[in-house]
Image (cartoon, rainbow, N blue to C red; front, side, top):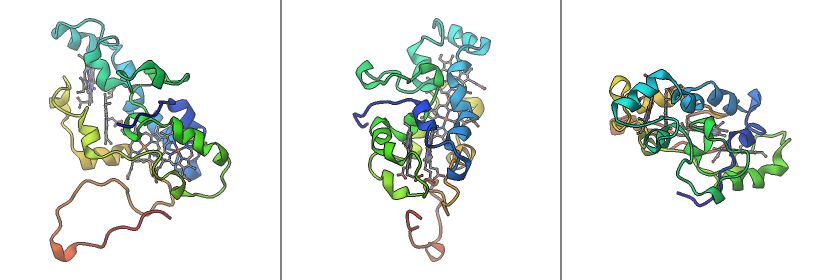
Length: 186
Ligand code: HEC
Ligand code: HEC
Ligand code: HEC
Ligand code: HEC
């Protein structure tokens, strides 16, 4: 994992909330990831914790590790504005984003879509990243399971000019039907 600092979702909102740029922030905000901390305040969560001999789920490491971002990251890598209550935030999947935020300041009003701008400073997640939380260690995993392809579709937030998904579930295709690798960018 990169050693960068965590900026918090409010910073990302400044540049990734406009509809014409893909409304990433709004899509995330409406997803359950944004409410994952609130879930730990529910009676259902308390019952789950109690059954495991744990205390308040909103304070237990063994609940927080999957329901919030950066719970075990040293304080010096957390910027002001980052809030635990914001749940599973952007930077859980994209890595610490403070450098990206700083480098993009001049693009705040960028009129054009320039996907090449961010190469290297922020990453895209893989199936392995999702399975760090969507696995049988989750007390409620059995009732939900995890179908990566379907789950990706549920949380997807692409730029409208993007012609194909960038992260995909591997589908086994017969060699004859294989297509050449997608070209990146727009
Ligand atoms: C000052 C503006 C700005 C801020 C703040 C910002 N971004 Fe970006 N981000 C951009 C620009 C510009 C691009 C290039 C793509 C584009 O033109 O839409 C980009 C691209 C990305 C990409 C795509 C990376 C790639 O390889 O194509 C991700 C992921 C991303 N940002 C995540 C974040 C996250 C997470 C945060 C908050 C921690 C954040 N951004 C904050 C401007 C910003
Ligand atoms: C840090 C842990 C964590 C990671 C990493 C994570 N998730 Fe989740 N995810 C959760 C939690 C916790 C919930 C349930 C939130 C709740 O109900 O409060 C959830 C819920 C979901 C849901 C159902 C909720 C909805 O909004 O429809 C989908 C789909 C999902 N995750 C997909 C993914 C995908 C795809 C990835 C990887 C790209 C991923 N998740 C990575 C913790 C995580
Ligand atoms: C390994 C990661 C992980 C851990 C640890 C974890 N959760 Fe979750 N939790 C998830 C994920 C992922 C979901 C989404 C549904 C699913 O796959 O279980 C979720 C969903 C939930 C839900 C909503 C269930 C529903 O059906 O809507 C509750 C409540 C919950 N967790 C409570 C807890 C409590 C309390 C703890 C600590 C004792 C805890 N979780 C620990 C990953 C985790
Ligand atoms: C649960 C994991 C997860 C969370 C949380 C998440 N993203 Fe993403 N993000 C992804 C995945 C997966 C993709 C690639 C989607 C695809 O290829 O279909 C992506 C793609 C992107 C892109 C690139 C879009 C493009 O067309 O190039 C940007 C920008 C982005 N996310 C910003 C954000 C911001 C901002 C937040 C928080 C408000 C956020 N993401 C939260 C998983 C996540």
